[in-house]
Amino acid sequence: MPASICVGSAALKDKFAGQPDLPAVGFTASGGYNGGVKLEGKTAVVTGAAVRLGRAIALDLAEQGANVVVHYGSHADEAAAVVRTIQERMGRHAIAVQADLSDPVRGAAMLFDAVREQFGGADVLVNNAAIYEPGDFGSISEDHWDRHLGLNLKAPFFLAQRFAEQFGRQSADGRTGCIVNILCRRATRPTAEDLPYTAAKAGLAALTKGLALRLAPSIRVNGVAPGEMLPPTGRHDDPVAWAEQTSRHIPLRRVGGADPVASAVRYLCEADFVTGETIHVTGGDHL
Image 1 (tube, rainbow, N blue to C red):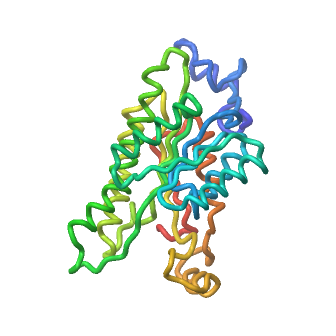
Image 2 (cartoon, one colour):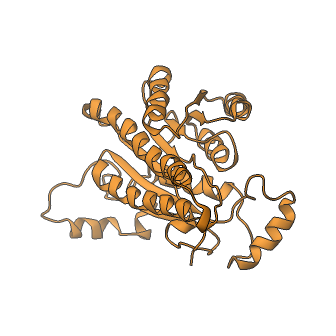
């Protein structure tokens, strides 16, 4: 970003006159910003990366030069296809790792054991894996609650815990990391329906801010809250009809697709002075 867009180099010198030296990272000798984190050669872990939004995120990070750990729960064939695409089209290293994140502690440990064995560690964690099961208020069971809280809220916490352990062991080398949690527009604009899912995503929004405080300065933590991006799995046979119907209540009058979410994730991975933020990618549907 050119210095003139934000604060000119002369103004920076005046602003910080008599103050301790500015940190070297992110600043040029003249005080201008020199760009963010480069993903080339980094290792990214993307949960739920075999299909839908997770697949788009994994492929986009690989396009930027990252090696990718493609986590999946049950979509083994789709995960293998993502790995092949990353290896053959982008020329990056990728592996598929199965882990059951409905058992959050054990699943997180299994995933990061594989990361450590194959890559030595990771620089980026994208908590994308989630469950969404519609449920009528009067018939929601305790098991329904536990499934949504386990995968949508507990798993991101214990994955972040395992991710952060790397930096505790390696803090002397100055490494920094990034976590991006995939939320939902309902996290900040709840509806009266599907309350276990909504509550779990709202909890993840709060967790995002709490982790940003707890893990700074070594690890930045942010969120992306998508809106109506793709037809819900298994409930719409005609994607075109779904898009036409859904877009009527979105201010921008269109649905998003997966690419805008992947772009937002990439921005947060690269933006090294942003933490504790949530970007809504909804076409205005969260307003």
